[in-house]
Image (tube, rainbow, N blue to C red):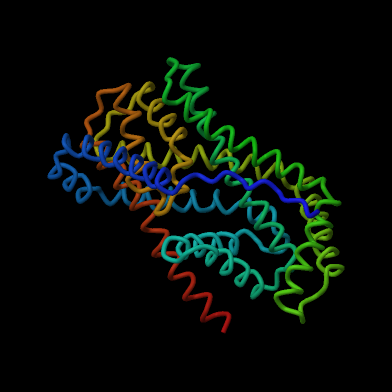
Length: 337
């Protein structure tokens, strides 16, 4: 008799919709609570009265941020080079903002191919840098919670964020370490993939070819991580600190008075909300209101200043790179033609 696997329990659609409605209502409540105490005339004044020196400093900091974020890619993709890694990163960032995934990955690989980078090096390095980036992003709340607890006090909101996202970072890290050692698993996945593709497209290579490809990819990735994984990870940790520093600088430019406790609070609040920037449009609205709620819980910083600082930060790290990235894509298309 044929064996039947028990069907996996599925979450009822009405329950899923109810959960979505609850999340939307919670976010709307946080947004409305924040907006009620904002003087929008002061926000507009803060945004339009940045001095030329402040704008120049923000552009310099933006260049530093892009350089740090592109460093893991330059380290993990052999033959790419530092400048091309920056161009590749900023172009993919712009495409990710306006086009659905995996459009940014396709663009990254196409740019590397046009520059003569080996396909295995490109795919392996891009995969590793992406995984390491998400591990660092999910682990940031743990750092923020520990620093704030050690330097100031225990905060349950930070603790829950650290627990939730830290668990995700641990799962990704364990999965990455296992994949780098699992040659047999890579071979099995390659044969399975080859059989599936053969059914869909009979002219595609068979399971033996895909098995060899996956083994080579796994071996290449393991070697890259052994030789360059630690520097790439350290750069990503430094990049998280740079990200927090950019937001603190934007806050100072709109009138938030900076002292030791304030800088600590602003930095740790950013770290525990940093994973939310992985949502569409860098978590616009969700990340901002959560960040403002965390800051307001431990300070008397005016909500107007918080919103103005967050808007300056978003123009700096979100809008400006999109414009530069689109120009980079146009330049690459013309030069590669």
